[in-house]
Length: 141
Image (cartoon, rainbow, N blue to C red; front, side):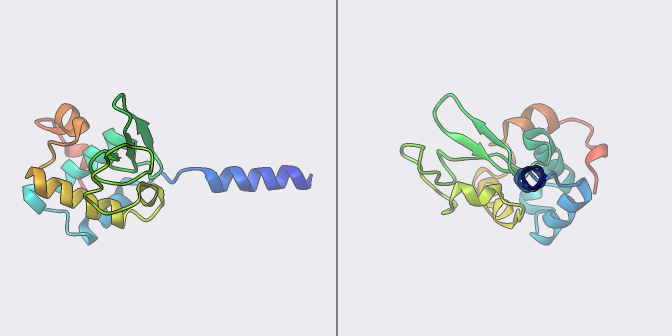
């Protein structure tokens, strides 16, 4: 019985945190994301939904050997260091593992840097294909 309880505790502890939309909205607003580079909150929310399903621990392995991390799927080739991606630029000066915790402050800080350099959300494939030019009413905060 002790082993079953321990197993249940470990399973719960290892599960990813899936943010609720309103929790994401609160974090985005607190980090000054609304209106940054003329990007509205619904665009950020739509991007996070289609990139990760609001999952703070989402990862995606790419064919070029890089990995995307966290709620906004930030790439290890350019933005973070995972110790596995050759030639990582680590432009956000952050360990990719920090993008997988439940505190998304550092994710949003890096996303802001990305959006600032790109002058928008064009680096996010999900935004270009699922959000740009679409009805974003279900992503309003």
